[in-house]
Amino acid sequence: MTLVALLLVAYLLGSVQAGVLVSRWAGKPDPRSAHSGNPGATNVYRTAGPGWAALVLLLDVGRAALVGWLARSWVPAVQLPTVCLALLLGTFLPLFHGLRGGKGVASLLGFVLGTGAHAAVGVALLAWVVGRSVTGEVFLGSFPMVAVLAAGLGLESGGIWGWAGSFLVGSAVIWRHRANLARWRLESRRPLGPHG
Image 1 (cartoon, rainbow, N blue to C red):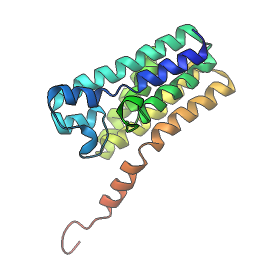
Image 2 (image 1 turned 60 degrees about the vertical axis):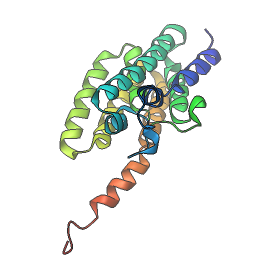
Image 3 (image 1 turned 120 degrees about the vertical axis):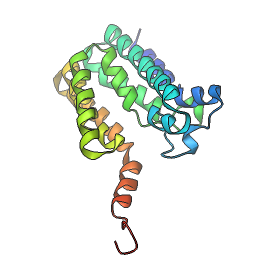
Image 4 (image 1 turned 180 degrees about the vertical axis):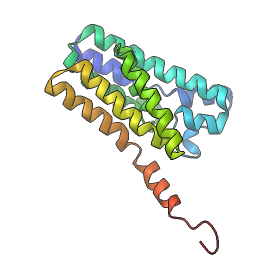
């Protein structure tokens, strides 16, 4: 499989938003219309409950892991971040869902898992638990997780271009959380009461 063909496959698979499809199938609200507006598992948890959220997470990670496995099998390691960026582009701007997509955390997790960097995935999950516990916010807990996953991808890719691409991958996922970060900062400055 050529790089161009794999980039197309990655984008198209990234464009499959499990949160939207599962919610529609279950007769639940489109997660993009409520709370954070994200179609990922966390927002599906809010709109549809834990069972459906678990299914969405499994599907999102699974389709990304397939892309990671294909990339690991068919292109040089240094091109792994390029394929991951195509997957993320589909996640951010999904062709099948009006270009309204997610943040990319599950996609990055699945992709790195698919490349075989299991140690990085384990450390990343631990980083999320610690980050979530310290900050009390799911999305803030994702930041150290994304950093570890990007570093794991850099180790898998190797070379200056592999590390540069991995840095772009991590930066893109963090950048997609800018609205969450702005909302969190605004809420953290809100007075606690009439005399706050």
